[in-house]
Amino acid sequence: MNVLLIGSGGREHALAWKLKQSPLLGKLYAIPGSDALAGLAARPAIGAEDFEKICAFCSETKIDLVVVGPEAPLAKGITDFLTRRGIRVFGPSQKGAMLEASKQFAKEFMDRNSIPTASFTVLYSADFAREKIKENKKYPVVIKADGLAAGKGVRICCSEAEALAAVDDFMEKRIFGSSGSKVVLEEFLAGTEASVMALVDGETYLMLPVSRDHKRLQDGNKGPNTGGMGAVCPVQLPAADLEIIEKEVLARFVEGVKKERLGFRGLIYAGIMLTMDGPKLLEFNVRFGDPETQAIMPVLKSDLLPLLAACADGKLAGRELELTGETCVSVVAAAAGYPENPEKDRPITGLYNPLPGVQVFHAGTAQKDGGYVTAGGRVLSVSASAKDLGAARQRAYAALAKINFEGMQYRKDIGL
Ligand code: AMP
Ligand code: GLY
Image (cartoon, rainbow, N blue to C red; front, side):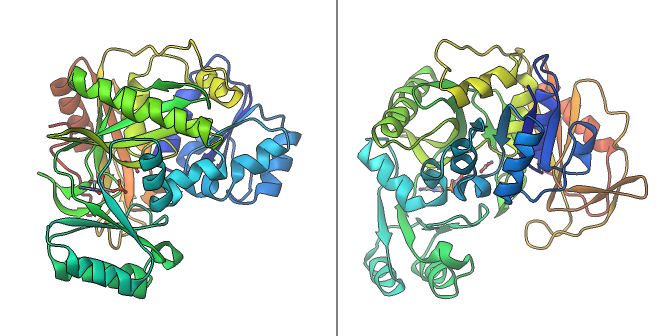
């Protein structure tokens, strides 16, 4: 099978690394890909959102499957565009992608389909939002910009002043453009988070091992929220929680998708909060998590390629997953200034001769003068697998100790 992978980050590097191990793989291509992906995939010079050209490329090169990494092309309808022209795609339709692209759509979908989640109100104007906030007596409260905001559109507000400032930023200043034309005011849920991902073929689902992201910049969950500073997989959840997640989140999601004809053949990511009242769904993403994927791929023994193709074909039923039995810890090395203002162009040393059991996935690097330099906020995901969590952590940090670039920041407590 010839495969075209859309995307360029650490998640795509991990997916490409895994796909490359498939005996079923013919040629692998990536659009736009990255310099680090060049060793695994050919990179035609086509923009990731130039659907016409992507389509022509797929026909010319006989692409058997397109795998879409990030949410933006999904929300712009890449799947609909390509499938209408007879190309097989792993990734939901534009309607399905609304589950990530609109918080309002997602929350109303959860409500219609009895999926446990935080209570919420949709606020359509800044005046109405301020009115509702002044009525609110319970803090913290959560305010979310309705549309895509690169993971920055959620504010946990501890006071009325903070909530009013969020409304001002999202709805008046429009710091995320039209994504802030509506906001969702949501009940704050306390607990521990878990990332639950499942392959979906429109009719059924196959759950991947549960993982956990670490979203805050600094150790002990301090500092600003980021796209994710590291992940661990698998995470053991109590059986009772797992049962609720399967029956009340994943099964109801699939039922809802069928009933509402959302055309969902791809990956669903359920961001779960394990609360005192049981698991509740925080959010849907409609693609593989980043950096969770960098911790999941190394512990997946099954061939990923036929599973993704089975999703695209609606033939996932009866498939099973095999795991290696190891634990993977993936630590993100981020640039100085991340998340606000990451410093670019810093030479990276120590990337070669990685330790056994370690994969270094590139998230934001570029090749320069025969080596790599930083080229993004999250620069690398250093993933280490071993027989248990302690050994995996030790390996990951031993590998990281060999890597360096000016201002490198990483958390020391990933997996704890
Ligand atoms: P989201 O983009 O909706 O997943 O939100 C990003 C992060 O904000 C989540 O991973 C949580 O850490 C936090 N968050 C979102 N909604 C809530 C909520 N209702 N209660 C507490 N934390 C939340
Ligand atoms: N790790 C969170 C996300 O992929 O959105």
